[in-house]
Length: 459
Ligand SMILES: Nc1ncnc2c1ncn2[C@@H]1O[C@H](COP(=O)(O)OP(=O)(O)OP(=O)(O)O)[C@@H](O)[C@H]1O
Image (cartoon, rainbow, N blue to C red; front, side):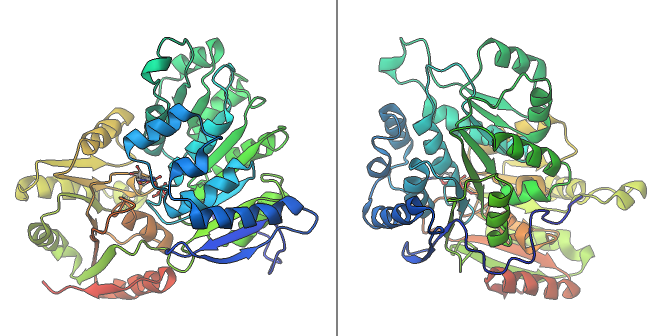
């Protein structure tokens, strides 16, 4: 169940707080809102950020002197050489120690931006948790952990040294008893956590915040809108606000009413008063290389329409999104859309080697297995609920099908953003919506809100 964003103070119309950096997709600085005058750091930092953003051509240029050399080299080996817009704009701010709201399109590389910050401040010799990344789902947690571990992998020349960065995935569905012993015996340097598991460790005082230098809240709008997570998240942020030497980063492709969010973060002391809102492509929230289409059909025709679309598109890798089954439908003994889809496609679509399922009701091992199979490469179709819509990075995905329309424009943005995730690629990816005539106006509303155009497709 979702609640509304609980943070905002509606009386605030034009708040003069923090800093805002707006950048369009061609990487031009559109405008800046400078920090209040009592904070001179704010002004100078924004200026230097703009200068660096204009001139830096590599991640190395931005990060050298802050991020350890072996991490930079590892990043280059992986292929992270040229910064994406959000990295170019946010890293100088992050590396200067300021709190930051990373607000940039799906697939724009926010994860690497905050991970590079983390590697710049933590000390491998110190036996304490120094960075915590909070994520909304186990799937996203596994992914972020993997990127952090890949960057932290010990280089050959350091292999003989005993210590290296350690990254713990403290995620719902994991083995908490093992994590408890690990945290007690030799705390990892970085923890990636979901709220449920983290709270258990905090309550038992096995996980302590004292030595923490960086707290990242990924998919922050989702976390604040989740009735299951918001209470614990607020508590965590409030506890962290009393720590000296802290730095807080919030990230998402969608932060509704971001000015109020910024204001409330400062009011609650969840962020320092010179927090910077890095807003990349504010007038273009949807990645431009996504092509959006819709097909009008009745509910009964949808499976056949999907089959025909798949046969025409022949996607190398695609995700079919369906709604989660309602309680009413469960009680009536109906099959969920996801089961209908899996059964139908397995029986009638033989053009791809694997059809996988990812939904909340599955057990954690099956969920992990589905994702890791998908990560092996393309030629795969994933049938999923919105659990796969946030943060999950499957770069080979070229096609998204909304078998059921999402509930909100924000959900549409995140579902669509599972495709087109290669930052410097020109490849166009496709989002196709199967809608009834009555749903056309809902889709139109999403188009207006997110400023994209959806083309009608006749079969
Ligand atoms: N500098 C870079 N050069 C090349 N590829 C990059 C770079 N930075 C990130 N990537 C790749 O871009 C993809 C998207 O990055 P990431 O998952 O961080 O996006 P995101 O901004 O967090 O998106 P979302 O809002 O959907 O979670 C990943 O596959 C990542 O490996």
